[in-house]
Image 1 (cartoon, one colour):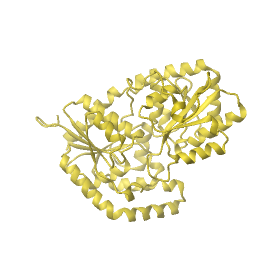
Image 2 (spheres, helix red, strand yellow):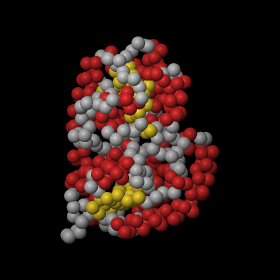
Image 3 (spheres, helix red, strand yellow):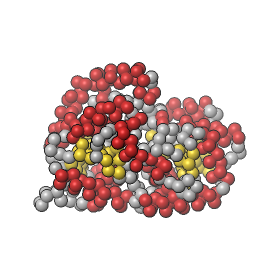
Image 4 (tube, rainbow, N blue to C red):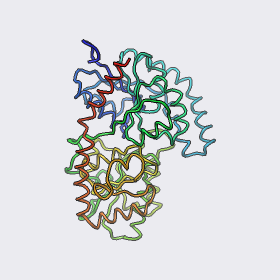
Length: 413
């Protein structure tokens, strides 16, 4: 309870209606809070009625759509990575200017929706909603920013967030690496480290789905080792590194019984995302199209993890956390991890995972070759990974951690 006789009302703001890693964290938060405080009223506002809000409703929480203008949904600092520095800045400023009139009306609609709900606290889950929270949330309501990114790698975003940080009661960093980055990139904001967690009853060893059928491929020959990457189609998630590793092994060990899978899809409407057609063309260019299956986003990612013998994390930039790593570990899978950033906090090399240098496709290929050749090592890594997930990343602790933070912030106000 917030006060005697008053029920806590928590409002989450999501910048998208699809489900990626940050949105899976949001769903874990909603489920955990409802378990920890059954009387709490939880609502999620998103820009469209996609899979995220459907999952929110299944959890028994409230869901609302406040439609975001198309011109605003495509604005992002991602083009600063894919275009030249000044060219990217000019393009971003032009897009922001074009979206400004519709953005003003959108902020007004968001402010109205928030005031109608009368939240005790607002929890923002992405950079666009961080900025909106500064403009649309009543000043007496505590605001929490959930930080899923290294803003030190996004200087323009960091600059804007520093200007908007004045009303933030607390930030939640998903790893120690993100907390350190926040201190240097955003300056004086209160930071609480609450690592991401996983539902051990959902992500657990068990039968997997038929990945070949989902990819439209003929069944794999007996003895085939399935190796896959599950991620959004963000260009830094390492799909090209996986394809390069597949090419490396196809040349050096053409008879190695491996089939590769790229599982996921684009969830943002920005130039920083591959399209399915682009990735298929990249596979063909490398001569591995017949060795790689493409599977779209699945409603049951646990079934996809369990269908794989080896799960690859291949991000080319430091990973703020690496939720798919922990989910794969909880499913008892052997993981090969691009060892940088928060991902390095999740596993012990050689015990419950294997680490490789980010972007090093030959090293990734060699790690996969070793796990194909030594199934007992795959099994040992998977068993240890499950124990690590159960010990360190059980979602049962997530709701109480957030609830304790909320109570402290509300009482402080």
